[in-house]
Length: 299
Image (cartoon, rainbow, N blue to C red):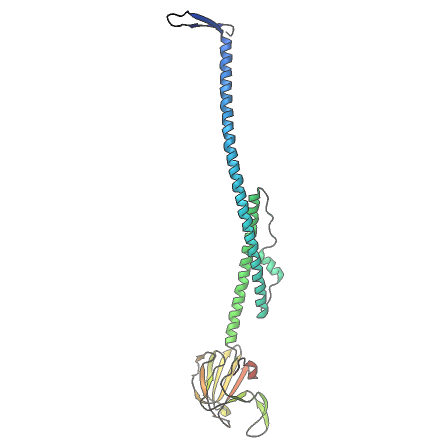
């Protein structure tokens, strides 16, 4: 079959001469095959060319995007480092607060448990991926630190609330204006001339001078008490009680809640007294104490 020839007849116009030529059939097959091969190769290389062009543009875009992300993650890491520094300052302040208010310190091991142990090591792939992983690890680290520290500040807040309540209920001011006439301890009795225990302090001033509660508390007694005459007793909690004697007039009732500075009575000379003055006592858990040690303000 491939040895046969194909006769081609070319018919010109009216003035021309007929021409014919014989072409081997094998040549037609070979030519057609070469054409198809060249056509496919041309299409393939053209496709590869445009694909490479697109891939290069995409690669350039991804590289630029990768660099931009790397820069952002690097900035984020710097920001996280600054946050970590500020956290360290908070820890120092927390330690200072605990020391100032005599609160128990946090054991280093407990603080390490609070932050969840050592930092994880990120698996490196691309620079952007590595930066993202590192930023994620540090962010998780700081979040755990902040949660732990927040719990500790809540503990301090609760402790300070308790301390504030305790301070509000601790006698700490002068109960009245006047002259400090007699102190706490073994003193001469003005009536007998002999020394005897004086369980409070005396403050002298004209009759009717206002007398105030020296701390928050509840009035548990209003009435006469032997040699103390008219008396007011306040229970402040935490074991503290205060007594105000030789009063001329009451300004509170039994069971009434009072605040530090509230006027509870007025100075007088009732009971065992040589003149208008206030007898003021402080006791804790039933033991009488020197009231001067619980007076922090100046008269």
